[in-house]
Image (cartoon, rainbow, N blue to C red; front, side, top):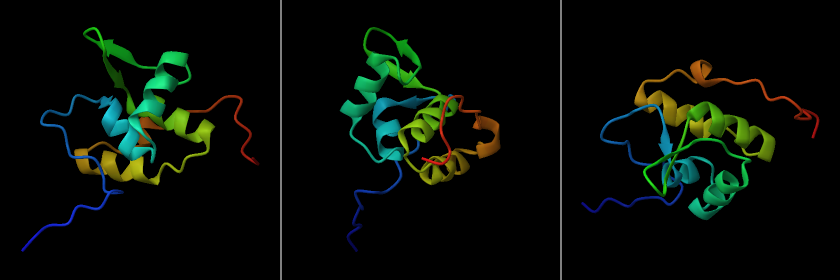
Length: 102
């Protein structure tokens, strides 16, 4: 039986979960391309750290903050965190300057 992989599926689990996401994993969770994540990271809208020279890592709390500000639903991030054993409340952040009515 052939397994069909849906393009909107959750990113594969990392071999060792270290509490951070790669740009590709963050892009799959946030419904966007990894280039969008890289541009937001380089512009300072999405904070994280560099692992080595070019490998960007994004903490889940920071990804959630960016997704809320950008108007992206966070339900997929919650499901991903549940798969790796994190509770969504553990990475909840207060978004300052975000208009909830918008």
